Image 1 (spheres, helix red, strand yellow):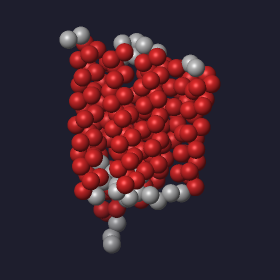
Image 2: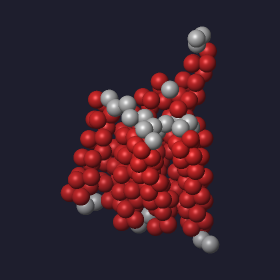
Image 3: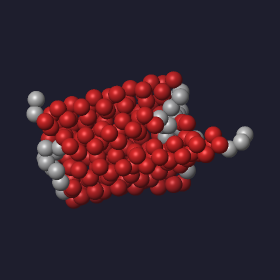
Image 4: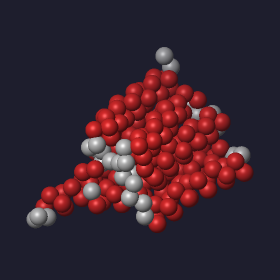
Amino acid sequence: MPYNELLSAAAITLTLVAFYPYLHGIIQGIVKPHVFSWVIWGSTTFVVFLAQLQAGGGVGAWPIGVSGAITLLIAVLAYLKRADLTITGADWFFLVAAISSLPLWYASSDPMWAVVVLTAVDLLGFGPTVRKAYAAPHSESLTFFGIFAARNIIVVMALEHSSVATVLFPAAIAVACIFLMILIVYRRRVLAATPP
């Protein structure tokens, strides 16, 4: 098996390993994802997958496609299970920004600009989850975001062609996952140290 295919298979495996307990946690009511974040992440991730394929990402893009499909499933579960439907004005801003990016990609027809716009929007999608994780840091899974940071680093290594269009999204998401993990750990420590 070629190097890129092996890395892609490893990244897909990490995707499934990360999502299984997250999905299980949603079903049990332990993990409460913010529905807007997951709608944004699902739509942008899947469109980035298509743009990466168009830009020559090859087998290295497949983990992003698998992730996009499962992310959309989480958005549906978040809504159906009423996980976190607390919607603020900023959350609406993030959602509108995400939706408005799709026509921009269509108009440009350039996978690089599509990925740049969609990466920016996907990072905005972290907004509602960062807000929620700050207030309720135990409502998110450190393991999930840790596995996704590692998965995205492997995705970058698995790409058949490296360019802005293929590398930007997984690299930026890895950094965002690491930031979110740091925030969750910090807030858990602050809350643990605060007397009731």
